[in-house]
Amino acid sequence: MSNTEGDEVCANCGKTAVDDVKLKICTACKLVKYCSVECQRNHRPQHKKVCKKRAAQLRDNLLFTQPDGTHLGECPLCCLPQPIDGGRDDMNNSMIYSCCCKRICRGCSYANYLREKEQGLEQKCPYCREELPLTKEDEVHQNYMKRAKANDPVALCELGNRCDREGNFEGAVEYWKKAAALGDIESHQNLSLMYHEGQGVERDEKKKIYHAEEAAIGGHPRARNNLSVIEQNRGRHDRAMQHLIIAAKQGFDDGLEAVKKGFSYGIVSKEDFEAALRGHQAAVDATKSEQREKAYDFYKRRARGFY
Image (cartoon, rainbow, N blue to C red; front, side, top):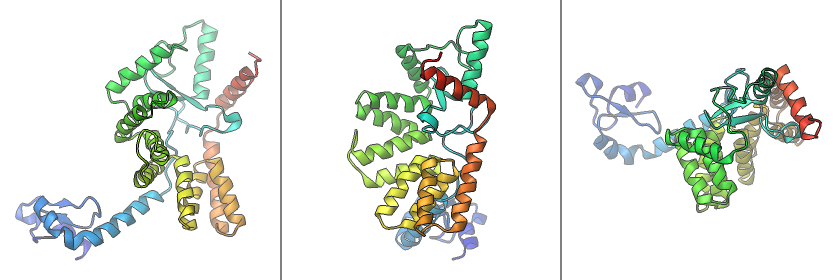
């Protein structure tokens, strides 16, 4: 059956949309349509093999498509891509404000701090302008709880992070599951690690890979790195390098170093290596600004006790 025919008729009984029948597509393979759940169920034995193969192809196409950016997105104030944490001096490049659950880059946070200091103003969130709880952990937690009740995925993820730090792994998993269901990429990555370690849940290889793939598709470069390790252990080095090349193009330093090694070993082509170098540099450059550099210098000096 051609794709055109599959779009026009029920794959099981042959009814068409012309017969005033609303056809629903097979969500797994996107190849055929059915007029009813019963027809889909009856056609399943015949369609299963083709459907499974096509679904795997679609998943691979999605998995190995270069994301537009990382899971961190852009700073909502300066609209520049958020830098990946773990770079220079392992400093945090952004922070989440519990009042609105917005991730603000270090440059914008610093600019807001300077403005408030110069004008003698109280410290407020640079995005929603709510008064900051500063170091009052209870108030921060209350803010996250309030946001979580409104199904804010960032708040749910942060509450999971707190449970994780406290050793409450079951609680962490529950929060991350809720956040992941709402599309939070960091929670998918966290769940993958929990299914790998068996913390808060039983070890589950399939769920580990599923959540790692969801995180990678959502732009998480560390998830890419983890998937590359899985593929290497399976002996599928080409797929492992594809993951690392994608991560490198996102500005992920560890990914670029791995691609360099792959090139030296002859398992990465010159063209792919050069593309990874160009992509990495472009991604890193896109996150830079004079404001962020000033903030980096300030926080670096303050960490050393100069302020």
